[in-house]
Every structure is written in structure tokens, then in C-alpha cells.
Image 1: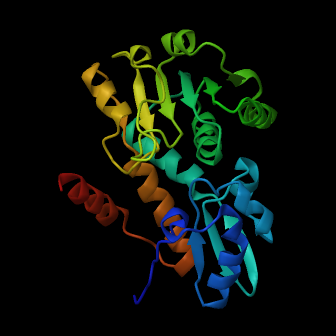
Image 2: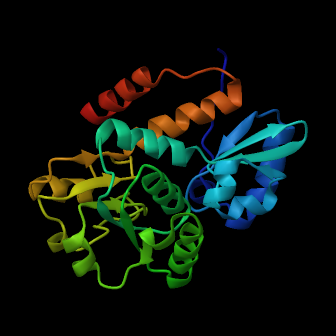
Length: 252
């Protein structure tokens, strides 16, 4: 297939966040089939779309936008991508208690995925109290008291079986750990949505503390991208080759 996939890094190009709607119009006019959306546009982009998939509407965020017949359609393949990654990388989490850091677009997708997979209880933390409470309220409509806004991260992680990082912390621009290192114990399963770098400080600390069930961000990245590829092209992606590509990149 003769395809072109182009990176539009707003910081590198000196664009303001407010340039997003003009970029969407421009790319649609230039013949692009669609665009992937990442931090910090997953929720902001919704204002410029004509319709949403069921998953995008449920999560309240998009990571994929298709341009069709002059209309912009938003999808959320993060939800299904993360769910598939959890099934492959962590296995059974039904009934577990977990702590999630992050209530933005990625956090909404991972929370929905975990609870739909049968997670028993999810405690959510975020520096933005309004955003955290909004996500908990939204999730509560579907999952009731299986969700709550976190108050004391030390207590919450002590009682939890798993910890999920759904923030950009761990990327080169946002170094550090999403939780204090002392909150990570060997009994925890660990998941990270950051995939660049693959080995984040969070995952490195978890391994050093004896955690044996660790989910890198590559799994979510591959499965969400495969679903987005199908939306853009109508063709099924080869996830085995995509995973191998990540493995080669990590080796470098």
C-alpha cells in the first residue's frame, strides 16, 4: 500500500493549541484520510467533530479522527487497545483493586477498559481535582461505587493489587514517577500508557522493587494504532509485525 503518515508536532512547528481546528480543515482539504490525536488534544478535539463513535462518546475523548465526505468523525481506539493489551500482558484482573494516576483522555479510556474487564474497584488520582471528579462521576454512572476519587495515595496503593500510570509522566518532557517510589511494592501489577521511552522510570522502579507483572505502553500503542489503521484504510493491520517493530526499537 502506498501510504503517508506524517507527524504534526505543535511544539516543534511553533503552533499554538488553538491552531488545531485549522489544521484539521487543512488536512481534510489536502486529501488525508484522517489523523491520530494525542496529548493534549484528546478531549479538546471533540469540539470540532461532526460525530463520535460509541466508545469516544462514552470515554469523552478521541484519539482517531476520520475525514469522510467533508465530515470529521471521532473514535477512541485507546479503550479497546488498552483492554487487549491488559488481556495479553496481565491476564486476570477481575475483582482486583487498583489505583490509577491520571484522569485525562488516556485515563478515561484506561479506566473504562479496566472496569469493563471486571476490575473490582478503581481509585483515581489527578492533580486537576475538577477533572478527576468529572471522570469519577462519569464512570459512576456505569460502574457505581466501584469507582472513587482518591484522597491518600499511600493508603490507596497499599490496599491495591495494581497501579496504572495514565499520565505523560515518564516521557522525556515529563520526567519522574507518577507515584512516590515507596508506594510501589512487589505484590503490585503495574501498567503504563507511556511508550516513548518504553522503559519509563515508573517501570524501572517497579522492576527494581520486585514487581513481576508489568505492562509496558507498547501494547496499548500497537492495538490502538491497529484499530486506527483499519478505520483509515479498511484493511487489517498485522499486530505481530507491529509488536516486533517495537521490540527492535527497544533493542536500539
